[in-house]
Length: 132
Image (cartoon, rainbow, N blue to C red; front, top):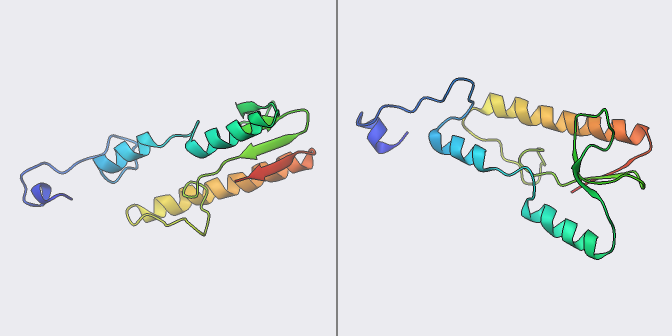
């Protein structure tokens, strides 16, 4: 809460219906997060392309799978995922937000569970899964 809000000078911010954002700044930040063409993805794709390898970007490894990999090498059956430390709960860098803690614990937990399920499903049909 800002000083002006605390002093009663501004009405307290209310999130739109269905939003989990704890503040308007948090909501803007959440909308600003990229899910495609991040700097690490662009760097990796540039290096792989320069090495002469060709791939699909943001593609489904399997036609009926609702999940997409950042890079897919169909003939070699290789799926590459460039996972963000926050969204995928990597212990070395992940810090749970203080605001809305139960929501974030559940959200990140579901993401991690979905990642493991994706890895298993692809491995079962002969794919190599690489996560960075």
